[in-house]
Image 1 (cartoon, rainbow, N blue to C red):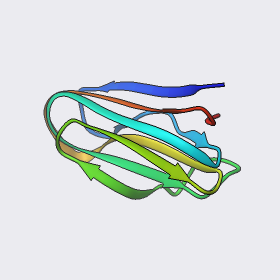
Image 2 (image 1 turned 180 degrees about the vertical axis):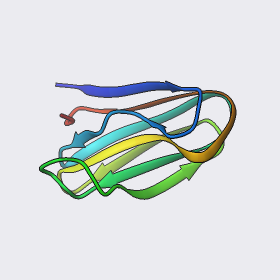
Image 3 (image 1 turned 45 degrees about the vertical axis):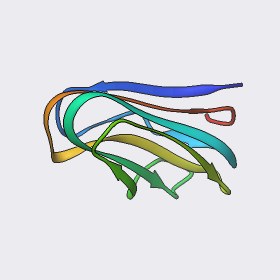
Image 4 (image 1 turned 60 degrees about the vertical axis):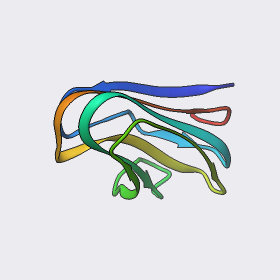
Length: 98
């Protein structure tokens, strides 16, 4: 069953809900007109998402497809101090996400 998390971000310190990517493919979408740094983060804590670490950052709209070999929590958003203006629409989704 496909699952996803989406969020329209209009300020700093804002992320999608954490979603567990079950080993397999997933996609990330960053769209909108904005001045911000969007950060993809993951957490190896499979009992409860915490201690997120940065994986990749974007400053322009982008579409990415990824593969995760383990069950890992991911989230996408804008960290404190990394938002200037606009609206960032972010999405993380895939077939094997909880």
